Image (cartoon, rainbow, N blue to C red; front, top):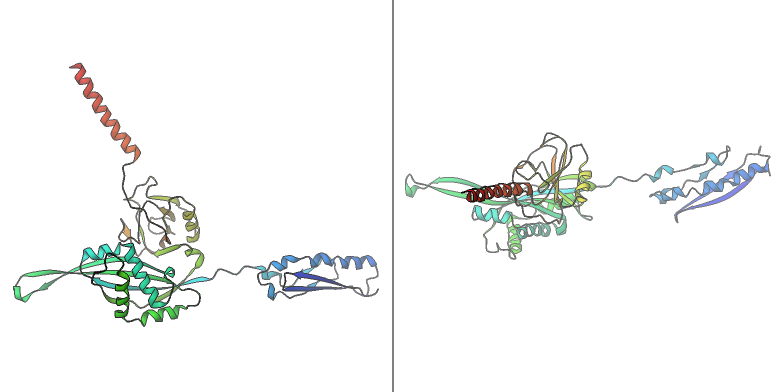
Length: 358
């Protein structure tokens, strides 16, 4: 026939039906070319288009040009590109709580149950699940001297002690950063204080007098979710390696080649004993660094780790969420023990020789 129409139905998934219509030109006089047109069923097998994640929007027909099946093109084929991962929105704020003395402030800042109480308090205030709230506790002690008129020239030293909770709230689905921020700013300090006292009732500080003196204005930032999966990262914070053991007990320098934060995190996850990792693109150690902290070293959430630094550009230390930190210990290395034993053995041998020879 002068015109041959072959209806080839291609079902791309349950939602995409592409009608492949081949109309041979009137000049097609050889039946074989009709058969060639029939081979457009091969084009109809382009079910790869069905793999597009946006299949519902792929409705373009399969069109066969006069050149033949080899020039078959699929409309919307570029739709199979994967969308970039959505960014995670994080709200930051800091609560300052005064306590009776410096010793109490230090002990509270290092207590896991107190940390949990602080997190629960903000979670309640914002309506955010507790697992979406992370805080780092630190303590601060300042002293001041007051002139006591009743003692004439005598002076007495007063100490001001406080616990500071640096919060990071990962905004969950159904919430907005603006809404979370508004919940923080609209919560009176005395309400936050009453909630905190209630949550501290299950800790060893249940009878401690605490007073909320400040809740900072919230700030919002976005970060790729893949960079934070499974970790809580501390911007600009880290530790120098020098005071820690370099035999793999406390740290391992995985790489001095520049890499992404996410890659360094993935390597930490697969490294036995890695409790946290430190990522620097060029800063603290004078070169790009991906290092793993082990054995309780550089425990930033624990408060005031050895050789702690802050405010360093392009530096991050990331702790495993829900991970348990080891207790930091400094033990004599095997080589040192062998060396000491060798010296002792030599002294004993020399003593025995001297006794025998008189």
